[in-house]
Length: 68
Image (cartoon, rainbow, N blue to C red; front, side, top):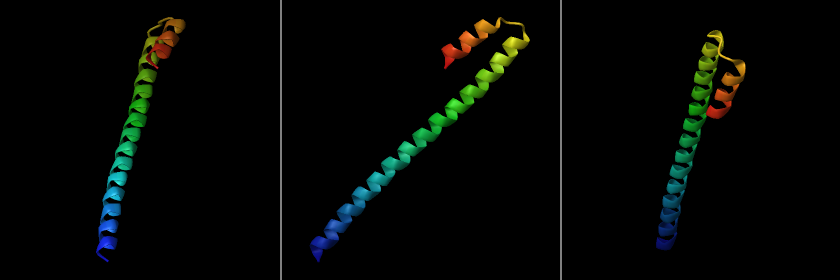
């Protein structure tokens, strides 16, 4: 019985570490997705402002491609 308790405790410990790693990976993924969405929104605003200021469309397109 003692071995069974020890083994379950060890499995539980590994499971907790695994869940912790998965949670960290998910948090990083969400942060990256959020940053990309924010970057795209900012880039859209900047490009719109440049086009409204009569900046050459080709230059605005190059800027957008270089930032991405």
